Every structure is written in C-alpha cells, then in structure tokens.
Amino acid sequence: MEENHFKFTNAVIGVPLFFVLFLWFVYWLEIRFGFDFDNNGILPRTFSGLQGIVFSPFIHSNIEHLYNNSIPLLVLLAALFFFYRKEAFGILVYGILLSGTLTWIIGRENYHIGASSLIYVLVSFIFFKGIQTQYYRLVALSLTVVVLYGGTVWYVFPKIDETISWEGHLSGLIVGFVLTFFYKKPEFKKVIKYDWERSDYNPSEDKFMQRFDENGNFVNPPKPEIIEETASEISPFFLSNSNVVYDFVENIEDINEKNESKPES
Image (tube, rainbow, N blue to C red):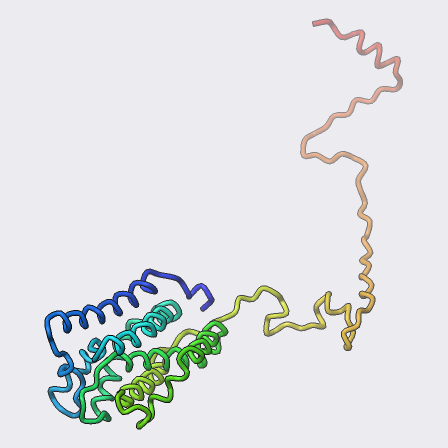
C-alpha cells in the first residue's frame, strides 16, 4: 500500500468533534438537571458495575476533569481517523469495551469514570502500531505522541495520584498494545522511481556507474562498440508489381519528329 492511503475525510474532524461535544452535553445534563451519573461508572467485580464498561467514558466528575480529557481526545481521534481510517471505529469501540472490562476486573472498589482510559488506548495503539509498521510517517506520528503524551505513562502506576484511576489508565495502555496485533495494516511499499532502488539492481551493468571506479573516482567511459554495417546492394532498376513498358529512342531528332506527328486536340 502506498502513501495515498492517507486521505483527509470528514470523519477526521467530524468524529472527534462529535465525541467531545457529546461528553460536554452529558456533563451539561448532569449539571442542568441535577443528575449524578457517577453511580453509572465502573464498580469493579459487581454486577451493577458492568454498566460502567459502556457508560464510564462519558461521565466526568468536574469540568476540569472533562477539559483535561477533551483536548487529548480531539488530537488523538483526529490522528486515528486520518492515519488509521479503516481501523478507527473498531479501535474506538473495542478500546472502550475492553479497557472497561479490564478495569472492572483489576480496579479498586470504587467508581471509575472518565474517558482517560480511552486516551491511553489511543496513545498506546498509535505509538506501538507506528513502531511495528516501520513506515516513516507512522513512526513520526509515534514520536509525536511520545513528545505530547509520553509523560502520562507515570499515571499507570499506583500511588502516583490516589484521586485518579490508575487501573483504568493501565487497562487502556494494555488494550491499545494488544489491539495492534489484531489490526494488521498492509505493508507500505515505497514507489520505485529509479533503477538503483530495485532489489535486483546490478551496478556493474549500469552505464552511468561504469564511469566510476571502486573508490568513486570518475574514469573515462568505455569506448562504444563499433558495429560494422554491411552494405546492401541496391538494384539500379525500378521494381514494381505492375508491368512497365519502356520506349527507347535513339536520338533527340527522332523525339521531335514523334512529337510533331501527334495530332492536335
């Protein structure tokens, strides 16, 4: 697959905006009508807490929590839908479900809410998948993600901050890495423009490379081979498939007499 796989579509902007706006809409409903959606979060190892696997990414404790998750989601979802557009929806859905399930298994006995686990899924997938493909654009994207969000890796460890769900972060990191093996991208092939880029290229057969010695010094080009052409015999007579009748005269006087004898029309 070549570079034209990366195409800008409406989903690159539309999906991140819609997702983040929906998070703000849910928070507005909670504030406007006095709802408490925290109880709909993930409560590990309880039957009622299973609903949080689906609902927890859309619930936030306060506006600061929501704001801190909104900017990374916009950036990471846009990168996902641009560079991995065919896999994006699957990663988004399975990332939410699998990271929520793992959090439900390993989490503390408390409600776990917020889209931070999804953020860790996206960071992990984009980083590890870019390294696996070894394609220069995706590797550059992986390095960009490391520069922007590499510091967040510390929050997958316990006791760094007791107010955050490090279990959700760790679950997202693990799930994102695992998804890189389920979503295999085709190998990116570089477009071959020159003969020396081919695998079967032999410099000794290249006329240009023959002008350089082993040390790279310019040498006189080899003398061109002189091909001797054999002269072909040309027939002095006109050849034709039609019958040609030749009328020979002896001298010019006979020609004049013949012309004078023709009647005038």
